[in-house]
Length: 336
Image (cartoon, rainbow, N blue to C red; front, side, top):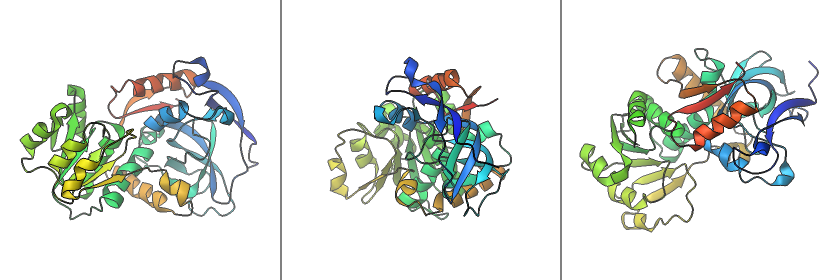
């Protein structure tokens, strides 16, 4: 097919709140010619992540119109000259890169090396909930913490009912021998974390006491989606040489409490590979493996809210839901 030169999209015209009229506007945007490893994807569904809020409220107005969206499931409609993993008609899922235009569009260009085959057992909406958080959780567990199938001990997941926490719990249960302790603050969050597979769910508001009720000796690893105000608790709960992996963006964090026991703090950003190692197919293979786990029934979708159609009103509503901090799992917007 002849590659289209433009596509319809939903974009932000200037940084602002989700409620602002210029935050979600239908536009026609240019499509670059596909690069040698690019796929042109007809987007069927997207989901909303905290990074969408971060970019929407802080991008340079010179970059407007800014198309958001960092999760997608769809169908390949054209391929670059050197693509060897996919063909036209393939169903795919991916999170893409913050360095490129986002997925809130009818057509989207993405490098095949960060794309995986969509799980055959999931709808496009169910699949779109998972790529960014699956990549993040996988890299947290197996790159940052260097866990293996033989790993044992106790993992504390702070924010166990959120998008990333839901996938950390599931992958830890499916692929390691760890005991998983998740935090939650509301009954619905506690139920969700338990459904994801957490052995124990505790109240994060008195973290040390709550964790010690189920893990008297403390924990071996911490995954933190809410780091502000918790560093001292992590230092107390972790052993000598214990490790924290943080997926949030706390400002002015004091890590000195970790020094006494020579504990380490790791950051996880799933966009590091697409930004800094663009030739690395690691995330392609990662998403292939997660798709196999889904199709084998060992991991499930984290979609809990499904909005349609994929237009400005639905995306605005999805952002408002996510920013309320009261959603468990993921919010998805699909074409129907």
